[in-house]
Length: 394
Image (cartoon, rainbow, N blue to C red; front, side, top):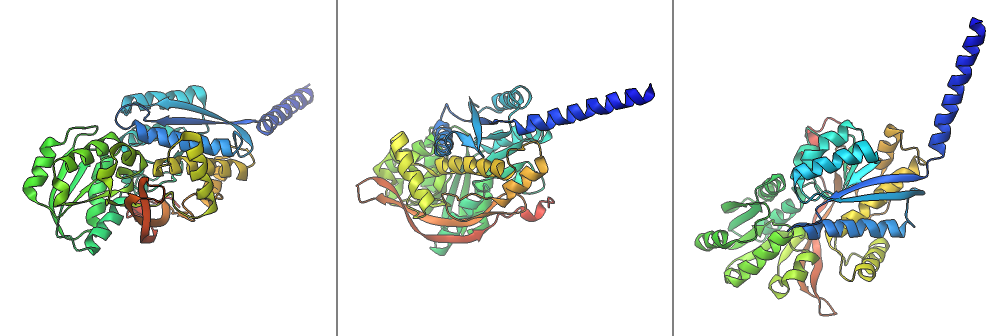
């Protein structure tokens, strides 16, 4: 009797095991929770990431690694509590395989713990807080864009090399803004006349511009993404400050979204980026041409990062042959970076942040008469972030 029961139990376990393996083999789709800022002053950034991501999905025939891509898109409204609620739904109800899309680092820091505790891979197409590059690095977090400090470091190095003696820094008072100040000062060793922190989402800069006028700097470095940067540049030029102070910015404060809204006042502004639409590699040429056809505008670096995020997921899913429940294998596949980025070659450091080149761009008119960025040269080659040594992940 016992022998019969044992055989029955063994048979049941074999059936269960066969069913599990059959379910894995029968998997036909990949779920992506796309959470981004799609309304308010920062909406242009999230829209560009979304559009770049969706273009990649189109180029991949609606699939990621050969499995049908189900992309669930939610607006975080640039509010941590909204982002946390949406993340909870993605993880518990929708059971997404990946998350991506967040623009602002304070939101990334707010949702990260829940994502990591759930052992869901987050592929950041923008936010790169120093915390996740250093002591809080996590095997489930990858940044396919940059670490927050990096573009600011590149501008700091260039401004230092050009001999500017008195610089005023302007950034919003949130984690990304603080990383910007630290990054710029890491390579700029001249006088910082003042560090001006604004409110996140602020659009009127009359008080800050009056302060800048009184300081009489020979250069102003600002990091104000989206609508914040658009208004700042318009008001800076309208106040006549551009006659005496050279404006510098990271690429995301001087990209195509800002240029389109501001126009001629952007001419002559220098900025840094790890990507540019005039890069000559085949992947970038296709991306830029098809983005313009699809959306009727030049892509920004945000769009390029969204595009690369999808390519990275595609490569990871393909390398594990759709077996997304094997987290360790998927992590190794993502680390291997078996995809061709629109920015050219780069690799992931041990903290899952990129080691890559950073370039100098200047805003001018192209052959078609459009006001846009032109790549001028390389500031950093194979540049890593400053926090990787604090990361204990192997």
